[in-house]
Length: 362
Image (cartoon, rainbow, N blue to C red; front, side, top):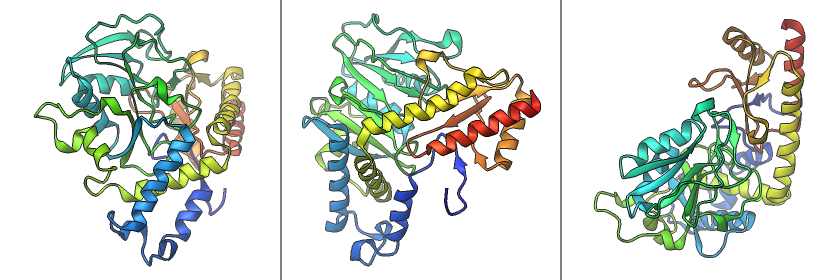
């Protein structure tokens, strides 16, 4: 780590690749001879149009996105998408949701404002420490879609096998695992991801939506901005978009392409996560919170024998040059988020710190 930076294990906003930050810094005052910072230029200018077009093209290459899917850059984060999905996709007023943690619960709560929500599977019985069996879901014939949070940031679970939706549209919140591993986009009707966890600065969501799901017959109460078709028809330039976030995300897309793509990221992320999980599984002091086969490679929650010791580890870790290891306020404990930009050395350093803490305090 350079520039006196620390290992930041925040769940979001989170670390970005240093190489990308250096490139952004170099272009800050004068982007490629334009005489302006990207934050200053018109979103209607040819210079920014090229930035937007290159970002979309690189993301399409990175994920191998089929031609019949639109890529949208929408302002706001998950809270907007929790409403936008049911507003746009609930034709029959019925949707199925899999409840696997805090973020799927929030999505369910919001969707209930617009129609009937059927919870077809849940892991609430064990405090969301596993992914429920989704191989034979009870999906009604009139359901408009099946919704999952593919990686629960707070609870630390992830899907390694997608649900059998029985022909219904699959909608996935991929925020905290977006671009961390290969993804067959054709298996989804809609993917959305808040970029502040694994891609760029907060304030924007990437939406990948199949063209046939873009509707003109939306209910009159749906605001113009909250129609996916509005964004698709205007290349995400219906109004002034989050230009800075698009620019930064485009840098990350290019960085990922240059460094082996999503297959390489998946390999690195598996290796990083194994370092931490192997330690937790061998520890007599720290305990991983999630069932082994459902463990996230991005967000690793764990606990000590007591809340007091959890808090002491957080304080000691900060003093040692690590930050944001405190678990989410809704679940407590500890959590290390180890997204693409977290180097292997950071995870190894954390394990070394935790091992020493255990030796001194167990």
